[in-house]
Length: 113
Image (tube, rainbow, N blue to C red; front, side, top):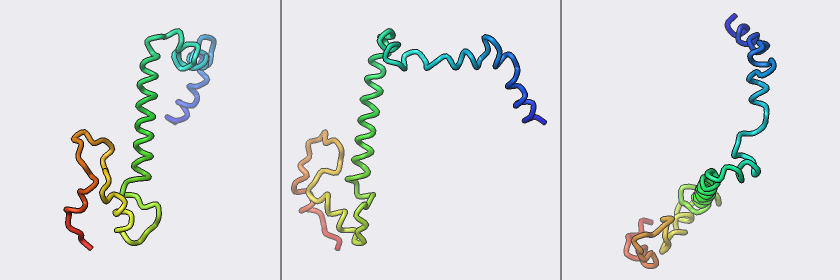
């Protein structure tokens, strides 16, 4: 009974009548989401640029994690030393703010094989 009351309420003039919610909501897209309205709302342009750059950075970082990290093995190699040996004498971190030299770091660590 409760669900039927909700479904019958859709036919109410408040929703479907002249000036109702359905007519007002179906006008088009929100302001600032089309090129024409984005040119008019100048304050939204930097927001879209920053959000777009952030989405590109996150997408590229996720792609890097999917292709380069040792947690995912796309080659289906049964020997775990194979994919792990990719980062011998290489930088695993995305950024290296300390400037550490990774070219000879794996020479000083012990080999556990």
